[in-house]
Image 1 (tube, rainbow, N blue to C red):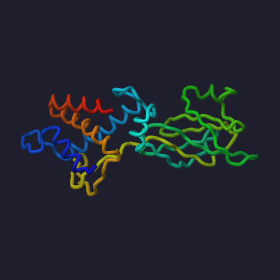
Image 2: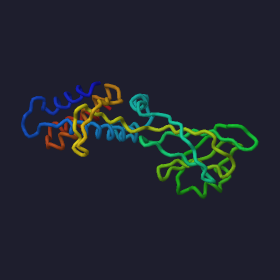
Image 3: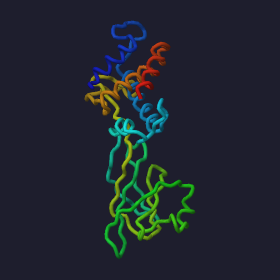
Image 4: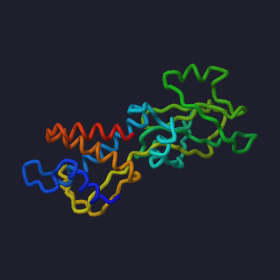
Amino acid sequence: MLNSTIVIKIKQRLNKLDSQDYDNLECWQIVEAFNKAQVEWSRRQLHGINIVKEGDEQSTRRIDDLQALLVTSPITATDEEIAYSLPIPEDYFQWKRVDVYAKNNCCADRRMTIYLAEEANLNQLLRDDAKKPSFEWAETFATIKDNRVYVYTNGQFEVSNASLTYYKQPTKIQIQGCVDPYTSVETITEVPCGFKDDIIEVIIDEAVSILAGDIESGNQFSRGTETAERNN
């Protein structure tokens, strides 16, 4: 869907297509509200805070709706003695999994099975014979802290290749010629939304609800909120 269509639909829902009063909307307000709506909608769907209580991959609808955000990125691992650390990409939104190939002095690359663990349980996990890193069983665990993923090896093996699969931040739309009041910079390129058109329709209702709340338009706020949730 074109950004110009998104703008028209938002103004139509707010009854502002031909408004010349003090509630007339600037283009940057529409962009900010739509981008905010994308993030709020995505967080609710991933966590299952929606009308059908379905979270990440709990139904084909959630899988289909959120697949546009799911990406895999190769990551360079850094040796940290008992673990290898992987930097989290700037567009990271939510965890999915980490894939690692490991090797030691006697064996070539082996794909490891990795479980995400709590940082609070690190010391216990490293001592637990059933859960500590094992090259023989090709299993280990990982934790997340300080914007990095730590894959623990306990000095048993080396990480030769790693990749991170995660949900990325929704693509922020940009409208050519729109001036950002926070930076006073004019947008020179058009950046469309990365979601499918049916999802964009839902996010438009979400954005309408945000804008209606900003301009204290109670009817449009209620309608936008209810419509966005009813179509999830």
